[in-house]
Length: 174
Image 1 (cartoon, rainbow, N blue to C red):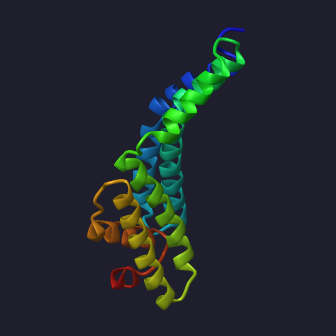
Image 2: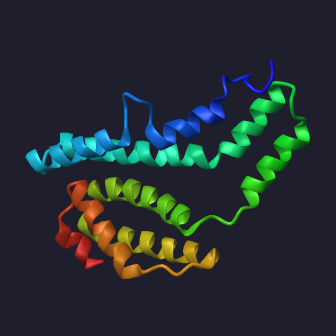
């Protein structure tokens, strides 16, 4: 079989990222998210749908960034390319300087996880954890040569905390 040992999975991933398939589009998810947040902004259902929509968007973007790696593996397993092509694709992916948006995206995920953890903690630990996360993002951005706007990050984090039911007054203490 030539090229399609995984039914051209790399191309399917790219198509899904661009439109998620004909029956499941990002735009429809965004419309429903916005409508649920309008109808029931405080409901867990609206928050969970919004979080799931964001997770889908991030997941498809992540898979799309791996296109060259997936493509190389598929073509190797189809007999069109050799192991050196897979190694080269993986090396190119692994050594590529991450885009600022990728760094921020990774930390926004970490913020959501931290926000869920913070929601279950006491107030003192919540404030300490918020500052830890903000400083971690600042260090990671600096490591890759990017500046991080800590004030904007804290504001975003306060919004994520509110999404998880943590009082904004606690988030603003950080």
